Structures are given as C-alpha cells and as structure tokens.
Image (cartoon, rainbow, N blue to C red):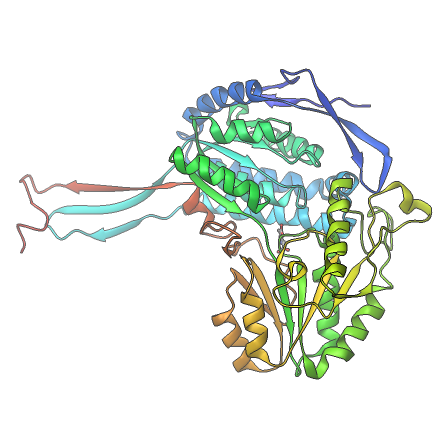
Length: 493
Ligand code: UN1
C-alpha cells in the first residue's frame, strides 16, 4: 500500500502529526487506494512561509511565461487523460465518461489560462489633462488559499489554481479528504510542467487544515467551493481579516418542463441532470417543475426510465450511476427520504440503499423520485447532494418561475419549451447565475463565467474571463510628461 505525502516547501513531506487517513474506493470499500496525511496548522504554517518565497519569484515571471507552463500542464493532462480519469473514478465513484469530462474541463481551463497570459488586459484611457497618460493594469495579490470539494476532483481545483497562478499568485491547496489522490497527481503534473516548487503547496488533511489556511494572516485571498454552512464561516473570518474571498456553495436547481416541451428531449435531460454524478453536483437537477398538461405523462416516462438506470462501479462498462462518495453522504440522503415521507410527498421510485451482488461493498443508493412535492417543503428547499429528485406540479410558466425562485440558492436552472418568448422571459426572470434553455441544469463550459446568486455565492464567478479579475488586483498608473503641475478637476474646469 502506498503512503502519500504533502508537498510543502519544495518537498514531499510527512505530516507534522504523523497521522494518516485511508482512502478507499466508494464503489468497493475493500479496495484501498492509499494512506494520505492528516496535516494540521503546523503544516499550513510551513506551506505559507514557503509560498511567500514562491510568490516573490513568481510575480516577477512574465505572464506569458507563466501561461507557457500552464499550456504544458494542459498537454500532460491530454496525454494522461484516461489514466487520471480512472484514478478519479476509483476514489470518488462517478463513471469514467464523467471523470474524462472532468479531466477535459481541466484541459480546457489550462489552455484558456495559457492564452490569458498574453491578454490580462488593462485599459489605457485619455487623461483630462494634456501630455499625461492614464492606464490600468492587473497585479498579482499574494498567497492564494484554495479549498476544493470531492465532486469534481480535478476540474474545480483547476478552475481556481490555474487562474491564480496565471495572475502571478502562489498557491496553498487543500483538496477534499475524499479525493486526495487526484490532488496529489495534479500537483505532480504542475511540477512536471516546470512550475517552480515553492509556488505550489499541497497540504492534505481534514477541516482544520482549511481553517488554518483561512486564518493565516499571510494568505491574502481564499477560493472555496463546498457547503453554504462552511462558506459562511470562511466568510466571517475573511471579512474580519479583510481577505478577498470567492465562494461557490449550495444549489437547489430546477428544471422546468412546460406543456409545449419536447418530452423525449426533456427526459434525456432530467436523467442526466438529476442522476449524473449520483446527484452530487452543485449544479445537479434536484427539482423538476412540470406544467399540469404534461405532468402525468412525463412523470411516467421518467419513472420508467430511471428505474432502468444501471448502478455499479464507475470503472465498469454499462454503469450509469456510481455510488455516493461516503457513508455519511448516504446517511444524509436517507435522512431526506424520511423527511420527504413525513412531509407527505409520494415516493414514486427508489428511496433505499441499493444492495445485492457487488453493490453491497459500496455506498450505493437507488435513484429516487418523489412526486406531489409541495413548494416550500424541506424536501423542495434544502440541498441533498444525492440521487433524489422532487417533482412539483404547476399550472403555468409564471408559477414555475415563482417556484424556481422561491429557494435560498440560485446556481442554475433549466427550461424546456419551444416558445422563444418564454425562453427569453426565463433568462430574464429566473434568479440563477446560469439558465439553460432545452438543456439540463448541468454542463457549464470552462470558458464562461460560472457561479450563482443568493446563498450560492458571494458575487464572484469562476471560469471564463471573470475569474481573472478575482485573482488579480487593478492598479492605475498616471504618467504626466508635461513638466508642469497639472491639477485634475481644477485646471481644466
Ligand atoms: C459542480 O456542480 O460542482 O456544469 C460543478 C457542470 C460542470 C461543473 C459542475 N461543468 O455541471
């Protein structure tokens, strides 16, 4: 069995605690992947000290040269795509097609970052005074703390780390405890591509490691994806310490199917949106809002097809749905099934642990559908992060939009309709960071801004061009070559 290390101050090192945690395959817990460090504040302190040195070096490296390294990272990921996807499925369970997509998202993010090194645009604007230039440009900020979840073990770290690096920051990275192997491989790849060692630090460990990163006075900015509860605590600390913070948190995303929808298309969409990644995406479709004219027909189509989904090891051909990531997650799903029943919703499919044969050794749960779910009930309002879909019946598009908006979260939404007017109304009125027309609530592309409104985020976006704003600071330069004192706002007016 392999014992892995953290990467601190340019070396692979054992944790200060001497403690390790086992990493097991959630589809078959007899399969032990390795032992990973359970670090603590001492490891973080050493990592930040080193990252400060890394920052001094890296911020002086021209942005196009920083981009060249990220291009090589993309090239290595292309070459190792199948192997990395396989090890990701082994440690977090989603089917290989999905982990390949996850790696591809990392590749897209690397190549986007590489080219951004030759942009990082500022503005040059006319000064109100003669013989004077006025311009803005972007500067790196410092040591970036990056704390990431298990569900996209590669893509989400790359969304944060690559732009952070491209902008000239150094990074202290803490991957989720369920996916340390992917984190390890990502850091190996960054080093292989030529990133100077002190620019990246990898500290494995439980929540206390994240805590230490967030609380460290020399960590200037933090980017976190995870639960709204943890995000709120991080927000309090960062607010008090005047740190820049980007949060991506919960979702309760809805697909709306209207009477004029192409039901076959919507069916493919809901199966993918609700049960892809076993419902463990921030963007997962956890509510299905259906107009009364097609409600009964569509629910029947859905239940028939969802009942035929094949559960199993994501590394086996033919598997549609993998396990949940761990036992705590499965217990949480069970808790919500009980809540749904108590609230009087109708259990139309699933609702139980999936067992029998090979499933007995993993954290499997049946794809679950509740109908007659009341808007406002807990089942309809709270994020579950599992394969549980709540169906709500509505009378028209206006009611569907109201139900969509009437939750605390606002990540993604989706509308199936053939009516162009309704489509554009939806884009305008749905309170989400992303709305899909005739596509499910998942499937964001790496070159567009990603994020949500309300309790999902704190106003920042990942992906695309906007994330580069987060990881850099605007500076303005005025150059007066007139040889005289020119007083802005006074001499010309
Ligand atoms: C997440 O849901 O945690 O849009 C990230 C998607 C993926 C990223 C999801 N590209 O579903």
